[in-house]
Image (cartoon, rainbow, N blue to C red; front, top):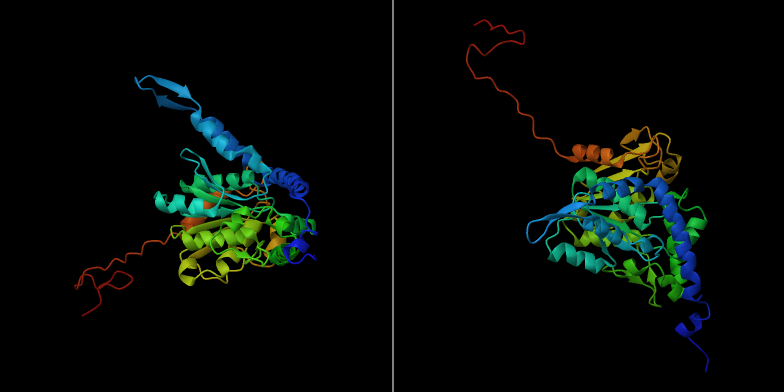
Length: 363
């Protein structure tokens, strides 16, 4: 009997055990890039310096424990550094547990809504977009704002490999999303099982799209934008979004089709990749380094609000890096409305009717 439909597509499939190790190796390589571009060493130092806490025993005798540090490092989960499936990590630099992971969007939404958690800020990284880089970037923002930050760790699938192989991380700017979206759609129609690898997080987002084969496809150029779009639509507490490098382009795509009442509550802050300010928001603060050639390529001529004497990296251990925590404070001060100026009105009367030189006019 001739094979039709999904049975025919099985001829094109490459076994997952052959693809996933390759994706993990590439993801691990991107993790090394994240250690260069993001403030990883600062996160590790902070956890080590503040990891030990005093816990009161039942009888009131204090004892030193490292439970806080242990929990934080265990939540980082070193296996996530190479895991191609995405996640959402809530990072709070000031309060334990410092990293709270979610493997799907409904789990994160339930945590935010049902338990009264007030997450007001989301962040997206660029380059390899691994768990390590995402935590480091969100940690800098959380330190500046003294509040938790929801960091999106995007999935990493075959379409990402195709884009990266064509130089999409480093020069195509917004047009690179067309490459990734087209590749994902081709995979979804020819190799649906392969197209699912690295797309678990996106497939859990409310309203995600699928091909007729059941494989996921992008609606906004990439999986990260689809996830961020769903989160901003569902979590009305989020009023700030931060992006670095390609993460800024993720934000641009994600907010493009949101309702106006949703976008007008958002304050958008970008580092190393200015985006078009076509979508009405509560305000844009965009920073670009003077010696940031990569940011210039990806911005496609979009002007930043502020030019700073830095390069593309946000790793504070490297000279002339972009100080995310400091610039976050600057952006927050800019976007905070100033109180209305109070004009002094002198009392009326002959003595007060003076000219600018202080003389009483003649009667």
